[in-house]
Image (cartoon, protein in one colour):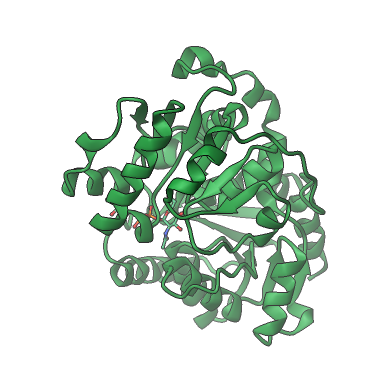
Length: 356
Ligand code: UD1
């Protein structure tokens, strides 16, 4: 049996995905070490999630910080390999598609440690996204692939991955969401953020394809200002986005009706999404969370690795164009239910691991 497990986290979405699985693995008697690569390190990009989700502090932090992709990935590999020399687990478990995911899998697989990928098989089919490169490489390398949905399973098969390595287990984000619903319901957004339920748009934006190019970011700012004329917008801004808005001289251009705030905690973020009239985002996880909560989502991207959210009709891929403005201001909620988005994904993963 695979008893000693390294659970790897590095960036904000990883912390969210690990919360329930970590607790349940411990409950099931596995010997778990939580390894934080340090890809995200600011208190509002990292610590706040540990506090919110009651995740015990990491056993080891590699403290790699920010840098270019190659440097960040390389540093994680170098630092994690040192850990592996000292303390070789039976299994390395990674989440999602961030640089920490591929870096640790590469280091581990070369030392012949078994590796498992949670959220395997997602594909945007857009290789200009760094995450897509990370997804493809991670899935090809890992021994065990835990897919959130049947589209993920199909993508893995198309890549030539044999069925013995693929396990359809469901969406781990929903475990965290359903597991914290009581706490989320207890957050008073009206007092904390000075908004009224159903009377604001919630916005997040951080993809390099949207925020790293001045013309593109300018188009988005003009689009948001038009929406803000009809509805207040609350905008917890990612550090990359703040840096670029300032660097391109666009921060002053934002309408007064767009309230830019620091990144907020997981629980606050779900509370704000749940009560928004609509969400505009380029995040992956938020496309899923809005679908689960039935909140209309407008995704500022040409593609999505989460097509089920579009098929369900809660998510729409858009460009920053005039024709979408009325839809966003006047959108209405839609309930949907997706197989395996039930809060039991961690349990299904653990049953598989027990059999390996
Ligand atoms: C990373 C992930 C992305 C995920 C996002 C969630 C990759 C390739 N991308 O993108 O998939 O959706 O995290 O947030 O792994 N910074 C801080 N404090 C921090 C972390 C970052 O100020 O704690 C700033 C730094 O200036 C850094 C920039 O944000 O240069 C970008 O951070 P980085 O981790 O490189 O990528 P993200 O854009 O956050």
